[in-house]
Every structure is written in C-alpha cells, then in structure tokens.
Image (cartoon, rainbow, N blue to C red; front, side, top):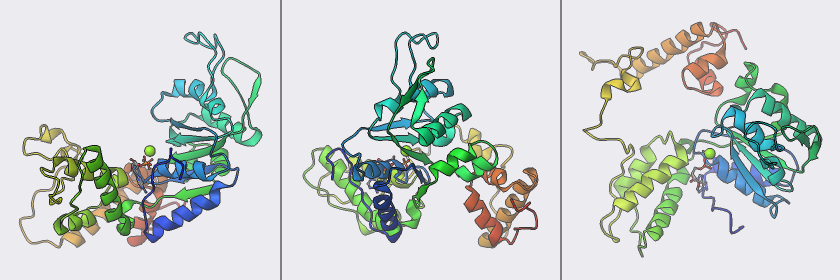
Length: 339
Ligand SMILES: Nc1ncnc2c1ncn2[C@@H]1O[C@H](COP(=O)(O)OP(=O)(O)O)[C@@H](O)[C@H]1O
Ligand SMILES: [Mg+2]
C-alpha cells in the first residue's frame, strides 16, 4: 500500500465486488464515475483507484465542486491569466494543470455549471482547455475521477447535467453500497476506528465492544454511512473512563439531549408535515406506514405531473429508490408517464 493512502476496510460480498471493480478500472486511461450515498467511501475509493493506476507516482488532486462558488470554480479548475478578471493579479495554474500526469478527483460533480461541464467534456475528448482570459489551448494528461451522491441520469433527464458529459464519464461507474447493505463490514470498521482513536489518545489498549453495543451497531440504519459510524465510534472511545473498559453504550445522535432547543422549528414539526398524534386506538403500524408511503408517492407524482425524477427528489429519494416504491405499490404505468 502506498504510504499516503488510507487503509480500506471491508469484507462484505458487496464491498469486495466494488474493490474488484476498482482494480479492473484502475489500469485504464478513462474517466470513472463513483456514485453512492454520502459517507460511503467515494473519496477512499478514488484514492485507491489512483494508487492502483500507472499514474500512482503522479499527483492526485481533489476538488469539492460544491465547496467552491460557481463563479470561482471555473478559474479554480482551469486557471486564469493575469488580468482575466478584476482580482486576477497574476497568472494562476488551475487544478487540471496541477493534476497533469496524475488524477483529478472531482467530488460533488452535479454542483458544476453547464459552462464548466462543457470544458470538462472538451478535456475528456481532446485533452485541451484554455485558461480564463486566454485563447491559447493548454494540453494536459489527466484522468478524471468524478463523484456524486445524487442520481446523475435523473439530473441529465431534467437538463440539469450535460447528457453528453455523463455519457463520457459513465464509461465505468462504480456504485458504493450503503453501509446498511454491508452488515459484515460494520464491526471490522468499528474496531478499526476505535483502535485508531485509542492510539490517538495515547492509550495502550482498546477493550472492545460489549455484546449490547455490537448489537446496537448492527441494528442502526447508518444514514450517514461509514462517516457516521466513524464519528459514533470515536465519540464512544473518547468518552471511555478507563483503558480496560469495553464500550457499552453508543450515542447515535450527538444532538440528543432533553434540553435540545427549538423543537418547534425542527423540519418534522413544520406546517406541511404536522407530527401525527399518538394513536388513540390500536393500529397496524406496518400497514399504516405502507399506506402513507403509497399516498405520499402518488401525491409527489401528481405534483411533478408524472415526472419520476422530480417526484423522487421532492421526497429526498434517488430515482431508483423511488422506482422501487412505485413497483412495491404497483403504481408503475398507472400514474407515471413511463419516463
Ligand atoms: N472502506 C473504508 N475503510 C476505512 N475507512 C473508510 C472506508 N470507507 C469510508 N471510510 C472513512 O469514512 C469517511 C467517509 O468516507 P469518504 O470517502 O469521505 O465518503 P464520501 O466521499 O462517500 O462521502 C472517511 O473518514 C473515510 O476515511
Ligand atoms: Mg466525500
């Protein structure tokens, strides 16, 4: 392993398949797209891809496209000449030039503007671009590794992401499964993070997780995936009183407190979503929730006039998750425009 690389933990069948895909894709000089929910390890996988490739001695440059404003992103990526705009006192080499001979990790790709997407497309096609304020083409040899936690085909369908760029980026798509689909990875990851945290705290020993805590780790749904697991475990380790004490309890929500302020302004209690009162008679919770799911899916479709991508997003779901719900309630074709 390259000393600069962080270790990758995982032994579930779903994760091993991903690692195989990464090894296979590494040697090609083609763009790769890594998709998956937040915290599933997209950046770790991008790193592995770089270090397994023939470019491993070259630079690995990372850019989070969502962290830079739309107007700055273009000059950040492609650089600019002196005087290209008011604040441009000197020439600036962009991230593409910095990544020459190596890989460029473009995180949160959907945050890029159409103009930036067009320039990225040109780099993929011709290996060329121009700095801002210049008409001279600069050539680079960069492998693009893109990442997204939203469904790019749905965005392209709505005209919010260039379909031609997506086609080029999607030569190879690596999809990271959420942690809840990788039960076998939970404990090895938890132990890895716990031991690292113990070492960081200068402790000699980590006494492990008590059975009750192991159980809780497996029962939690991990909406924030590996990042959430890491934070939860690190918090538990640093709260331990003594080195020889095992972890008994886990606090999944760090905001959890009887004194938590502002309950009324929390989204769940907003006027559109009044909190349901406790049932005053026995109900079948599963059936009730199923009916509610069906009702909300139909309402979302109605509002989006049958556009499934929009309906999915209005419910905070991916296109595939939403399709799953439609299938489950046998709603496909009845209320949708088959798009
Ligand atoms: N398989 C893994 N093994 C070890 N650490 C991991 C693994 N997957 C994710 N992590 C850690 O979890 C955190 C979130 O991973 P990251 O790659 O940033 O997720 P994403 O980019 O998908 O949001 C990071 O601290 C990363 O080091
Ligand atoms: Mg990330």
